[in-house]
Amino acid sequence: MTSSPRTEARPRASGRRLLPADPLLRRLVLMGLVNSVGDGLFVTVNVLFFTRSIGLTPTSVALGLTVAGVCGVFAGVPMGRLADRVGSKRLLLVVGPLEAAAVLGYAFVHSFAAFVVLACVATALSRGAAAVRSALIARALPAEGQVRARALLRSVMNAGLVVGSGGAALALQADSYTGYVTMLVLDAVSFLGVTVLLAGLPVSATATGAAVAAGAADDDPRGPRTALRDRRYLLVTALHAVLELQLAVLTVGLPLWIVLGTGAPAAMVAAVNVVNCLLVVVFQVRASRGVTDVASAARACARGALLLAGGCLVYAAAQYGPAWAAAGALLVGALVHSLGELLTSAGGWTLSLDLADPRAHGEYQGVFMSGQAAAHVIGPLVVTLTAVDHGAVGWVVLAGVFALAGPALTAAVRGPAPGAVPAAAVRPG
Image (cartoon, one colour):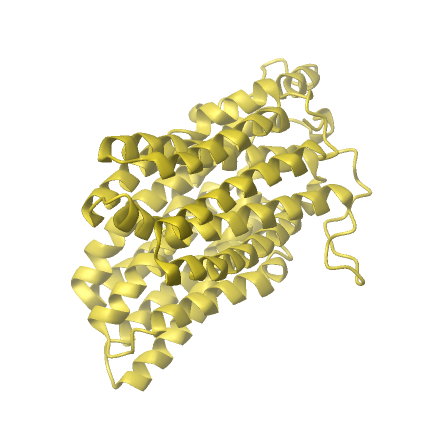
């Protein structure tokens, strides 16, 4: 993981403050909060806006978002490479306003073709920006606090999503073009707000990945590794992407299973989502404790994988028994599932950073984020073809997939990193 001369900065909150004491992390937290509130506003209303205000059919919306998701998969690596060349902060200062413009563009879409093009642009910008932000954090924060800092950021971002979703309920209630467009405008404003906060981030906008590589060249004349040729990194990315299928389980498979495969009331869909959000907000930082290196990260992922498998088995059991028993099983399954998600997230952050060449963090984070994006694109199909279509048997198959992915990932990370560079040779960028 990248080291930094800012060793005095600790990613922990002061006991008398709601925000971290470290000014850099505090600014990152505020950026994450503003961005996630905007995301919550948009995600909550976007499908209804596309169908009820633009006039697209649900099938057209699903197809367009799928195509956009595929575009997002391929955005991470080129954006990451560009960040390595020009600097993560400088690139994000440009991408933020572009994301705002893309969101506002939906208000002027009146055809399926225009919708698909704009959705592809917006998704590519979003996925690429995620990789660049990850590279920025990797270079800006001290190595010893990286995982805890990212856990704090994820907790805050989940809280922001809840706030944004709650605010969007007003637009859903109004169910009007004006209300939906207001949500788009507020989301665009959030991107601009993040850009303003980023401009004041105490990180040099001119320090580039090229400069980092040049600084490390004296220690390793072979130059930086290439993520797309780093077989172990690609394998770890793929195996962690398997674990990322848990998101589709939560957002697609479980709602359909509750309604179609169990006797539990439909309100349980909201209940399990609330359980998941609350656990992430409250316990993500705690779950990151003890994840300090590649070995501990792999163990966390393996434990998380077993919990995800256990959650699937509990979901399967919800098919049997009366409504109250099904509801109880779903809540228990959501609890076990969420604990697994906490561990696999914490482990994934460390693996994505510690196995990367610090001179090419942008490219490496782009590869890792692309793996996650791919899982999010194919996840709904995988979950539908297993759990939704085949019931308890399908849930058992998913459980087996998770249970095998954990040990496989642990085996994949053994041994020293190829071409490892001394951390002291790397400067923040």
